[in-house]
Image 1 (cartoon, rainbow, N blue to C red):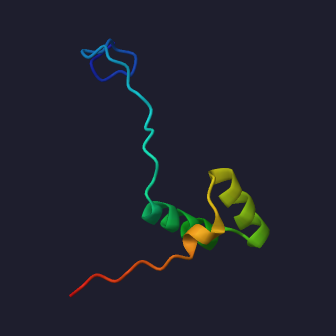
Image 2 (tube, helix red, strand yellow):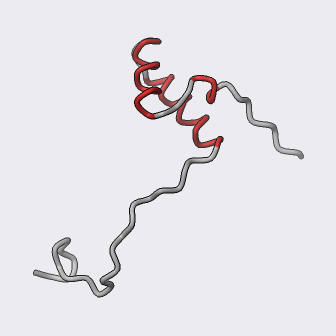
Length: 68
């Protein structure tokens, strides 16, 4: 076993906790739009969004433009 092996003993015995931060509204909007662009049809899109816990309305928000 070497130091790069995933089964090697760790120098830091603390367990790695799963990522639990919820995505912000912009991340959710982008996810909905990505799913919609990749879905085969409307039914496929609806099923994928439901499986991911997203709502179609979350993709409709138009982000405000940055001031120049």
